[in-house]
Each structure stands twice: as C-alpha cells, then as structure tokens.
Amino acid sequence: MRDLSLHVLDLVQNSLAAQATEIEITIDEDLDRNLLTLCVRDNGRGMSKEQCAAALDPFYTTRTTRKVGLGLPLIKAAAERAGGQLQIQSQLGLGTTVTATFQHDHLDRAPIGDMSLTLMSIIALNEECQFTYRHRRGKREFAISSAELRQELEGLPLDHPQITAWLREYVREQEKSLEV
Ligand SMILES: Nc1ncnc2c1ncn2[C@@H]1O[C@H](COP(=O)(O)OP(=O)(O)O)[C@@H](O)[C@H]1O
Ligand SMILES: [Mg+2]
Image 1 (tube, helix red, strand yellow):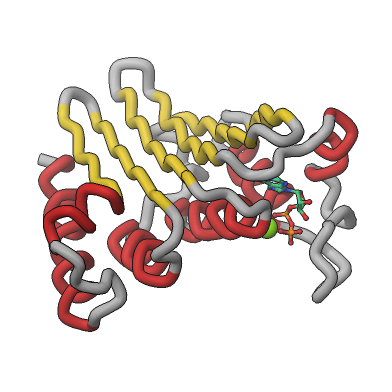
Image 2 (cartoon, rainbow, N blue to C red):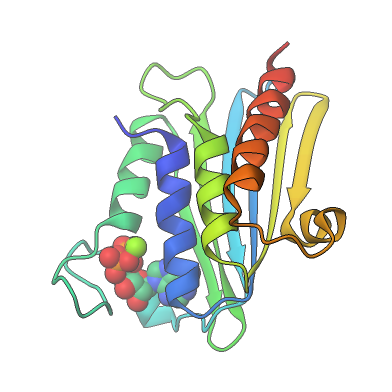
C-alpha cells in the first residue's frame, strides 16, 4: 500500500509535466462524514474529454521515456479499494483537477504518510511554480504556500539546505498538531 503523500508526488509531477505554474494541493479529512478527500488542481495544459478517459488506462501516457503511465490508475485503484473514487475534471488550455475520495476509517485506506517530505521536495525543486497546500482535519487546518514562504524568507533560495530542513520540520510539526 502506498502512502497518499506518494500519490500526491505523482499528481504534482503530472501537473508539472503539463506546464502548470500554479498547483493547489488539498487534503480534507471530514471526520463527521468519515470522508478523506485529496485534491490536486493545476493551471496546466489540461486534457480533452478523450484524454481524460484515456488517462485512467494504465497503457496510456504522453510521456516518452516509458510506455506505461501508472500514476492515475494506481490512485484510482487505491481510492476504490477504500470505498472511494477518482474524478478528473479538465479543460484544454485551462487546467486539471484530480480528486480522490476515501472512506476515512476504511481498513484499506492508505495512511497520509510523510507530507513534510513531499512538500519539501516539490517546493525546493520547483522554484518557478506556485504551490498552495491546505490540510483540514475536523475543525483544524494547516495551510502553507510557496508565495508566503518566499515573502517570509526575503529572497533566500527555497532549496537552501537550512531552509529545506526547517521547512520539513515545520510541516511535520503542523501536520502533527492536526492530529490532537
Ligand atoms: N494534471 C494533468 N494535466 C494534463 N495532463 C495530465 C495530467 N495528469 C495526467 N495527464 C495525462 O494523463 C497521462 C497519464 O498520467 P499518469 O497515469 O500519471 O501516467 P504518466 O504520468 O506516467 O504518463 C499523462 O501522460 C498525461 O498525458
Ligand atoms: Mg504521472
């Protein structure tokens, strides 16, 4: 079973490959409705209806380095295994929203995993892209954006080792504080 944080990495990779400059990642744990929703929205090149349908076929990919794409079919399978589903909304030229739902307490629902590592990697490695991350759990919420980080760091590079270490620790603490 793959952690959801690794699926997030996959989805963000897709958005970057589609030339997105803005990517929004949302995790919503609605404990009252026993529902976990994971959503990645981008302003990349988007897909036609046909491409959207094809994207769920493991043998469809527009990448040229390997003949099978597996990201989306794997996430779809993970969602369905946990009583949820995967939805792709996309418009050519405008962007794509991928939403996966999971029954929160389902035995086969993958753990969220290490979001601090996922966020640190994508923020540090893609300085030209704007990321927003929001994680709600019940009544608590943690949000962070690369724009806000850049402002606070006043020009220090987001891939500086001290900054990435700090960012990782900060996200780890904030994520942990959602649990209590
Ligand atoms: N956010 C996105 N924007 C535009 N196209 C996308 C996006 N996500 C997926 N796709 C399309 O769907 C295909 C399949 O995606 P995926 O299952 O992750 O496999 P892979 O990334 O290995 O190709 C991609 O090759 C791409 O053409
Ligand atoms: Mg992919």
